[in-house]
Image (spheres, rainbow, N blue to C red):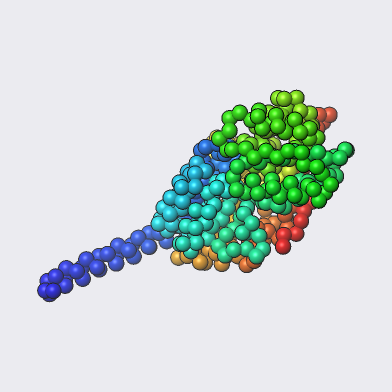
Length: 391
């Protein structure tokens, strides 16, 4: 190799190193957070509002000067609840130097996104998407969840309420969606019901793309349940309820209080429609809810403020974690911060979000149940906060 060739190679290598350093420096000009979510598709009414709430929260943080003097760059990609698209999104976000990944989609996207997060050694947080068991103690390294709903605990609370509320022996119908966590949760509820002296008369697991719910509702109605419990994305819960009522079924229906629940209770005005959730409804008029409503109005969002709680709580957690992660931030530093976090959610939940090295969900999960009161002409509490230790 000639001296001239050596000089050229040295120059090229030097330029490459300088370019790499410049890219790294540019990346550190902001905290890069990457999100893959179902912004469109069958489940978007449940999964898209939390993303919007998170975006509005982060915009407010940046407008106030960012975190530790640095802006937060929230990169959002739509996966339409398609696992392959979610995997591609996760890879792209890692390549864009994300120090935290967020999944706001259906559980069918979890395996590929988790795989990409582990490969890149980047923490993964579920926001507005059902919490997987991996965040329960003993939690897996690098997986966290801010969402209100989670497997097993939700059904335990729901069935406990049904048992205490039912006037007659419970003949229970169950409904879920053909996605991994929903199917598993409905199976869990089936087993749990038998231990409480309930008779499960039918269980319907419904595909996401279903347009006609009448066949599933017909099977449920034919089994003569006096209660139906559904745990799935809102579209499955609501359409199952609608189909049952359309067939003349008059029993009690209990379902998870997703973002859409509050407005639907007011619209349906059905005293036998109950929703169970871990978020306070906006009818409570909390100061933090008024703050959210003002921010949503200013942002001119297409979604109502009542659907923003999940995203807002996700924002509170991200901001608090980044405050403990002085730039230049790393994925490892963010993971450490998340493992030692306690967030006052200001009444949006029945208690704080508190994470430890072994618990990436919360130390206690609290629930409320709401229904429509025809005499009062408003949504009321059917049962105030009650909860379970998470261990």
